[in-house]
Image (cartoon, rainbow, N blue to C red; front, side, top):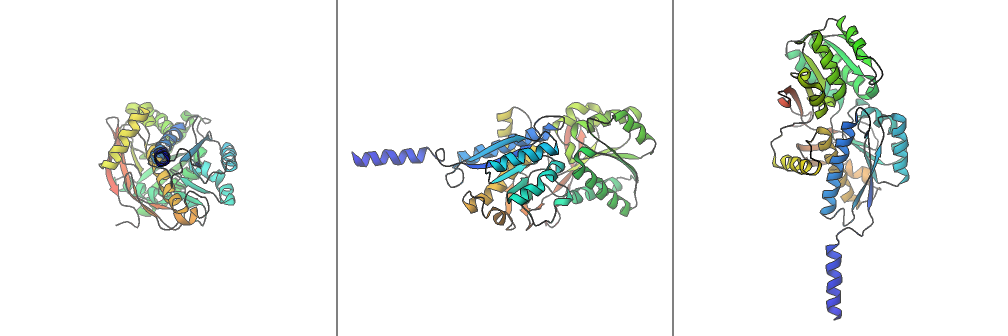
Length: 374
């Protein structure tokens, strides 16, 4: 009888998995409301899917992950507030923020607290090569902007005007300056760089200012929604002017809100919409089944950010101590779209792509190997 009781207890322990173990708290911070919330919502859902799948597989040494979700509302002050709340909850790390500007706002406090921050989508160069607690799964601005400049120039375009959004200044200002530097080196010229603040400045006034610069093409460093609105206004003036944008705009919102106006717009990004790999296809199927909508780059990169964090937590047995060192050990990881390599500073190396909007879909027209990769 006693032997049978022991057997029952053993079965219960095995079948309950990690459900009764002390959870490992991980924070998630992103913009979940407001005009740019598509990044944060898709990112949150990608992260939640990863957490649930890891827990279903036994968690970290039998301990489940618990994702504490916060909305930074796209406001730097709110970003600092919610990061403080997550730190007060003794999270081992934070996944976030959605944009470089929100990441910049919390950067100092996160480092002072000694808590790892894994950003899925913050690509500003100011975070590159720093001895800090910041890690990311998207390449730095400089590489993406230089590749965009080369693509535009080799397309036969030598004069470009730029419109960029100050509300994500840490990203947009860095992107256009790196673009200008490379474009000028190649022999091109940036006619004008016009800034605005999303949701505040009048787009019609922007377009009137732009017309005076007589550009051969326009580079929009703006969100998906603003890119769509600007494209519509520009097409009314010149239906054939070449338009370019950054990967920030590569979400379904661009296609839905832009319609025919965004047909032909080209962008540089680190996301391949039609990546042919069984791992990516299986993820896409699971995401679609769970959320009843298509995936975006934000969902993919947040899922991968959780995978990166988990690799480090496996080495520290779920503890905060030693996590930075674990992640800085030149990690190599199979991502959803090829291998990810994190260097000693937590910066990632991965391929980037040039895509075009064609028949209401993102279509990759060029693959650019990552710096430092064969």
